[in-house]
Length: 110
Image 1 (spheres, rainbow, N blue to C red):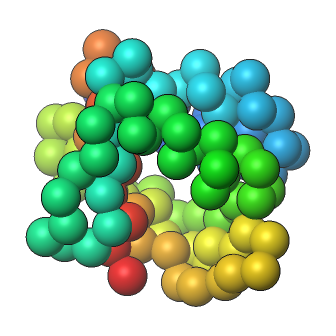
Image 2: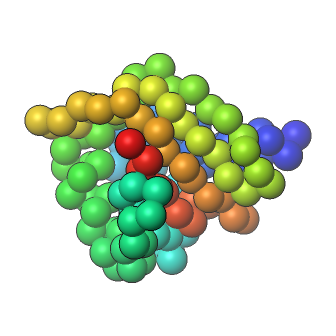
């Protein structure tokens, strides 16, 4: 049951990205959510992350084909699959932190 609760916002995000539902995408993130590229990349501020979600996910129609989910700790989920957006594609290896039913961080590990 704990895993399903933890997975819910991440799975909902992947489904919302697939259907290009911007409102539902935004709704999966906490107000203070952060984002970074790479295992050692510096996290963006919450404000920068909101802009990034708009520019890189919503506007560029980011999607993950055939997402595979792994719960790796009490509040972390990894998603693997094939990521694509307008003009870009790469293997997805995303680390999400979830707290209180919302995503609080998204690290894109390529």
